Image (cartoon, rainbow, N blue to C red; front, side, top):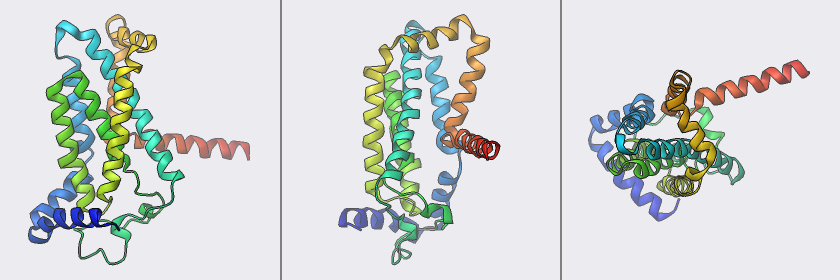
Length: 235
C-alpha cells in the first residue's frame, strides 16, 4: 500500500476508532441502497420536472447522463476484470487495526478493487446532474463523496486511489455524454416520448431510475440468469 492510501485510510478511520456511532453510520450508508442510489434517483426526478422554460434541454441532458452512467459502470467493471487483481483493504493482512468494521465476504476477493465501480457510477451521475442543474450537481457530488465514497474507504472496501480513479473515469464519461451524446438525434427522440407517449415513457423511466438505487445489480442478476438458462438449453 502506498503512503497516500495509508495516510487517507488512517485519517478517515481515526473517527471510527473513537466513535462507534461513526462506524455504524458508515455501515448504514454503505449497506442501504435507498441512501445511496435512492437519494440521487430522487434528485433526477426533481430535476426532470424543474425549470419548465427549458424542459427539452434539461430532459435531453438527463437522458444523456443516464446512458453515460450505464457506459461508465460497464467500463469500470471491464477495467476491474482486465487489470491485475488489487485486493480490497479489508482482505489485506495487517490492516485490521486500521479499518472499521467491514464484511469479509468471499465475493469481495473475486473482483479487483481498482477502480471503484461505485465511484465510477455515482460520479458520472453527479457530474451529469451538474450539467442539468448546478445546485443538484453540487449536492450530488458532495453526497457522492461524503455518503458513498467515504463509507467505502472507512469499511475497507476501497483504497482512496480506487475512489479517485473511479471518480476521474466517471467524470470523463459524464463530460462526453453531455457534450457529444446530448446532440444525438436518438436522445431527442427518447425525450420526445415523454411528451407524446407519457403512458409508455414514464413506467419505463421509473423502472430504469429504480435500478440506480442498486447500481443495476438486479439487471445484472437477470442477465446472468438468462445466460445460465441459455447455456442449459444449449447443453
